[in-house]
Amino acid sequence: MSVEHAGAPAPHDHGRTPGGRHATGYDDDTRARLTADAQEIIARYPQARSALLPMLHLVQSQDGYVSPRGIAFCAATLGISTAEVSAVATFYTQYKRHPNGTYTVGVCTNTLCAVMGGDAIWEELSEHLGIGHDETTDDGAITLERIECNAACDYAPVVMVNWEFFDNQTPASAVDVVDRLVGGEAVAPTRGASSVCTFKEMSRVLAGFPDGRVDEGVGAGEATVRGTRLARERGWTAPSFDADEHAATPVTGQDEPGAGEERSSADRPTTTPADASPAREQRKQKSDDAKES
Ligand code: FES
Image (cartoon, rainbow, N blue to C red; front, side):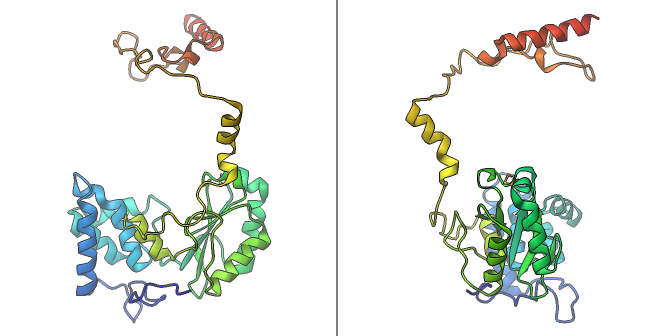
């Protein structure tokens, strides 16, 4: 499988000049294309500066990371300073400050995945690839990351490749996935698109330019819909909720604590049936007693 866009810089280019220094700008064609894309992004927001997050993904789709020239482009296009752009880019882990590999392989080592084998997968992959967290293989193919919970605990332990799910992994299956990626094979995730795309291609989708693959592959898997299925079979429904009846009690100001004053969550107004439960009444009584003592 081709791992780069046709016409995109070579894998090791990453927006740098042949001498290795960071380029200070884009060539005319690239700049014109990025500017047209940026205008489309900006048009989605009431204020131009609100477009910064997708703009950073756009830059990554070009350079493979948030490059110095990409930061300068965002700042100039949005009318903000490069310091403001950098402040945002350094806050989120999805924005890369150095050239990323073609595939980001993220191993979930959050609590549930960790105990289900995520730690073992991480150790195996790290040793197999010879790299640690946020490091990239010498051939530029794989960037390895420890990642936090990806809301796929029902398939723990999970591995993500460019944010596509690989469910119920083992150390051996994860090694097989990265070996096939490095070998240039088209690799299918467990759910989602029929094959994983490159980091740059994924970044363009995150910038808000659909690749037309949204309906490919498996959507929600059996483990995810199991609860809904059981509820339907057994006729379980959620308690009814009358929005009018439970409209938030107007805040009078009398009952509100002053700035810095302590207040228990048991003191909040009754707005749902659960708020009127005996257990809550007990907590409220305790809170009142504590205030009086
Ligand atoms: S802990 Fe790994 S997906 Fe939730």
